[in-house]
Length: 280
Ligand SMILES: *[C@@H]1O[C@H](CO)[C@@H](O)[C@H](O)[C@H]1NC(C)=O
Image 1 (cartoon, protein in one colour):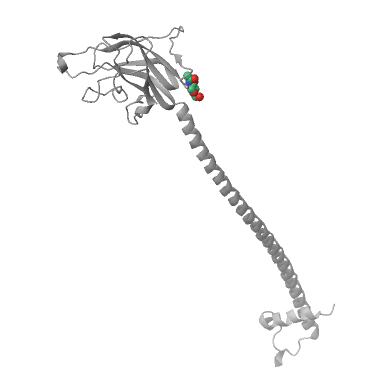
Image 2 (tube, helix red, strand yellow):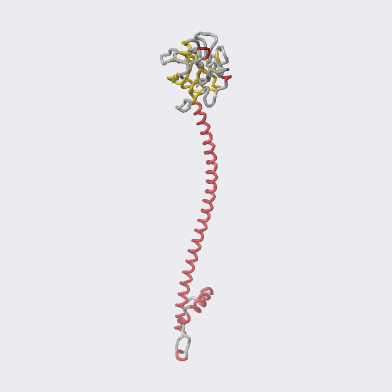
């Protein structure tokens, strides 16, 4: 029989007080004085075994608990790491967001540039006297009998100041009315009218209008080229047949240019023309 260690003895005492000892060791009574020390000894050693067993159990449980604590600690550390990674990723996402916003702005700018180079198909605004009229200074002619900058506009009519149209001094095939759009525009159609005359003025009706014209265009007035048909011949467009009806010619293929000249080649009475163009 090994002697009780002090630790086990302590446990034994505690357990005795609470559970085992009381029923296991009946209080000596006058009638049981016959109980031998041998019995007592074996009861105590049984108890000792039980206590040792329990101590082992407790030990292994505390080991388990320690292991679990270590595991929890490790998990905590991993969570801390993940948290930091998340913070980093968050920052990266913020930076990417910023970059994406910058790229968006660039795309918007590029779209605008693209649009000005390749305007939408519906390209029918009046470029001379529409919503954003050209200043008179951007309308030029070879020569003119009357002030023409306002009279040449498609909607102008004869009144005290205006003659009812542009009318050059010279009557030949080399006269033109030029529009400077200030920048390259896409031109899709040309509109013309003859000379407006208030009926009854001096008893004359002046049936003056352009019956046929050609177009010249360019980005530099020294390098103007004639509008040609698909066969490479200079194209003549049908003009007016009276003084006040708009004649509109849609161009078979649009012109991209800053300057456009309308060059009358056939006329009735006198070269007299009001004009505008469609484009964007
Ligand atoms: C005018 O410039 C634009 C843009 O640079 C170009 O696309 C167009 O072809 C030019 N027009 C002429 C008639 O040279």
